[in-house]
Image (cartoon, rainbow, N blue to C red; front, side, top):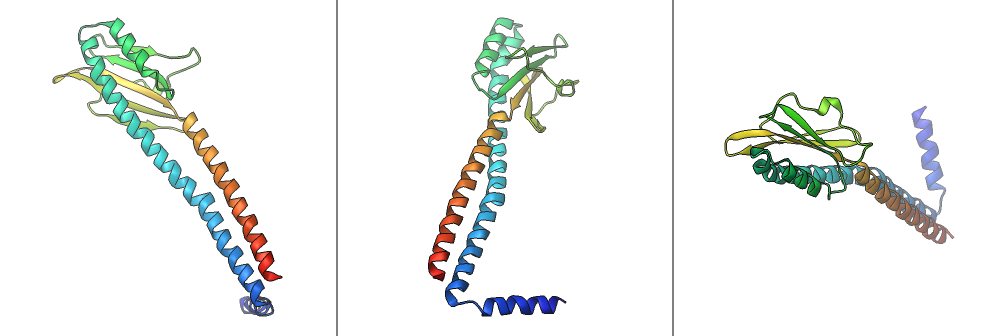
Length: 195
């Protein structure tokens, strides 16, 4: 059965003119480029964007933890509030949570009334290293707040991935538009060559 199918394809190709064969070859190459650009490139772009977001999260949390350590050490909540306000200049931050060791309490800083902290993200214990957790819509980064060798507490930042996903979708649509344009140009060229 497969042999008969193969013979029909060979006969179909051998019955075509050289121009038609070239046109088919051009369209096949353009189709491969289209598939590559539509599937592989966006996947790689998403991976790179998420790695960039994680790097940003690590840098930001280290800087904030360093800045918060004197304020927590002296229980200066006004300074803590000012530092947290400065963190919200980053549009991707959805919440800031500070767990204080000395008072065994948790301070929540939510930029909007609608913002929430998932209960499973509220730490039971204080980690000693920077940690990153991700779900479908958010990235959570935690780090200890230390002064010298003393751990004062833990900082947890929640990042929304909404703007990152929107940016990726926009670029994917741009790639789709360009691929369709390339395919149309290829069809026109192939049609011109086959005449």
